[in-house]
Image (tube, rainbow, N blue to C red; front, side):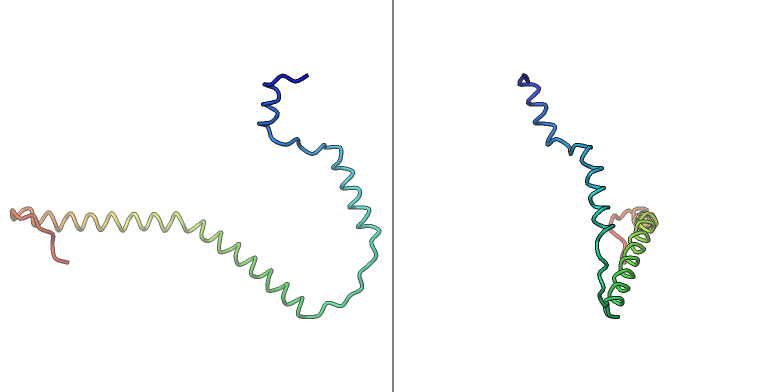
Length: 109
C-alpha cells in the first residue's frame, strides 16, 4: 500500500511514460504495413512538382535567412554600441566647450 507521500510524489511526477516494450511492436507493425501495401498508380502533374519545388526553395531560403540573422545579430549590436558611444563622446565634447565659457547650455545641432 502506498503512503500519502508516495501518492503525492507520483502525482507530481506526471503521467506514466509509454511502456518501452510497445515501441518495437509499433515499429514492426508500421514496417509490415509499409512492406505489403500496394503501389499507388496515380499521375502527378507538373503543377504538384512545381509546387513542391517552390515550397522546398522557400524552406531553404527561410533557414538561410534565419542563420544569417543569427550570425549578423552580434555584429549589428556591436556597431550600434560603437555608434552610440561615439555620439556620447561628441555630445560630451560639445557640452565641454560651453562649460569652459561658464555657460551650461547644449550646443546647437
